[in-house]
Amino acid sequence: MSDLRELLKEEYRKKQKAIVTPQSLMEMIEGLIDQTLAEALEAETPTGIKFDPKELILRMIPDIAVSEIGWSDVRTVTDEQGQQQQVSGPQRTLLVQFLKNIEGDSLEAKIASLARFYEDGAQAYNADTTDRGALIAKTISYLVFYKTLTKVITNFNASSAGFSFESFLAALVNGEQIKANTGTIADYIDRSSGTAVPISLKLYKEKQLEVGGSYTDLVNDLVAPKFDHPLGNAMRYVACTKALGYGEGKEGNPLSQEGAIRFFQFDFTLDNVMDILLQTKKISKVCIMLPKQVVSQILNGKGGGALGISNIPEKGQIAGPEELEKIFVSAAKKLFQANPLAQAMSPEEFDKLLTDLSWAHDDSIFLSLKEPVTKEDVGVIRGKSKIGIRALKRLLQAGYDGEVVETLARLIAVANEEVITSQSATAAKDKRRQFLTTMEKGGEFFTPEESAKQYKMMGPQQKELALTHTWGYLRGGVHFSLNQTQSLKESEPTNTVFLGEIKVGTKYVAAAIEAVRQILNEEVLQIFQSLKVLSESLNSYFANGLADDTEATTAVDNAQNIQSKTREIQKK
Image (cartoon, rainbow, N blue to C red; front, side, top):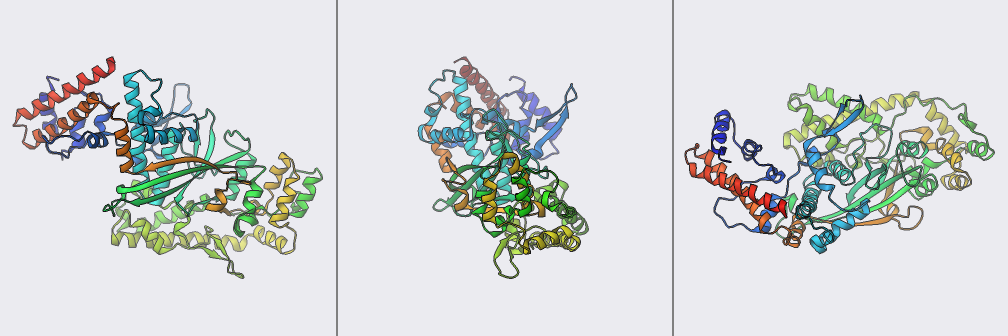
């Protein structure tokens, strides 16, 4: 520590032409202080002010960069055996290190543990813990969970929050996100129980929950599973509803929102998929219709090929949402490259915009289609539905200014029109769709209700074959959808389980801090306080051109205090 002053002077000479920030200052002393908490320093309070321990802890809880915890921050390398291995980026690695301390061998158990933490503080997990260092690490880990969750839920638009929430929950359950366009409806893998359980995650405002996705992908996941599942051929849905509001006098600041997230879970299986979709709106129900000839041949023991509709034309260019998204992205890139205002966006900013839009999954920016004859609402169908400009602008306003919002909205709408045009041209040539329409009009399909009854009489392999001959699978490009009432039904067919509730908001984080004050005692508070003073002293030292050595001495003294207090804790 005696060389700290000279080290800082040397670093200052190297960086004197650069902009000095608290982050760059801390990088200068990174080699001298081996404390993860130092990464979250914020030097905002003038030196000399009496510290409020609760506020100090809240500020010093490690601050995870939410935008850097998703699969986009994971790179693949080749190990010595030639095997491909994923290596997480620093922010995801840091988050995983903290969240591995959250107790529970399932998502439900972890939610219960986190809920107890609000009520009982450290008593929720320290009954058998005698290691002082481990106890502090676990306490900080629970606080990191709450602080990061609050950032994810309250400070991002709907699409960004959903994507970051996937990353966050994947880290909590020792899993990882699944990239789009990989032929599965799953969003991430849950390994908390020791097996790789596929999870499709939905996060919506309370009373607005919608559980759905590509019918083709769902059938493929049930017929040819790519992951483990305790129920065999199945896909698990975790549905979350959030109810947030502003505390009195705090309107307008996203981080001031308070509320709760409720977690629910149910599974699609070979046995219940027909019954679940049978209770949905028309656009989902028609997906499960079975050709009468196919049912007859399956129940008579025949299989293979296309069964009773062997003369059906090939699928041709029928595409699902993920495939259509490739057309959208390609069109958007060309439009952005030709527009002077959009040209200023970097590749990273363009990728972030695509993530925020979530074109293949977020229906909120699209206009719903109406059935031509009955005018019944049939929902959003990509390749047919137009962009809703008002909804799109509301989404963009969270991250862009007025003129930019207008330009981006127009370019995105035009790119979506190109997708519609491409599919209109394809549909005109698509003999398969025409063939299926003729079959439907000719009464060659069972109704959804009749199809579900016939399906119940089949065995597992017969059900797999039947699903690949349903109307929705043969046609392709169709979405299914369940509303909140349908997806959260505790009885059959979903048998949805309530996993628990987690409070969200800085108010609740502060309450949790109060509950663990006995763990984060004077030793830890002194470390936090020394980190704060250290940062302030360095700011003042550099602001005065390295002229006042007393500031450097203060920094050295606090660095030494951090070191000594850390050693004291480690010895206990």
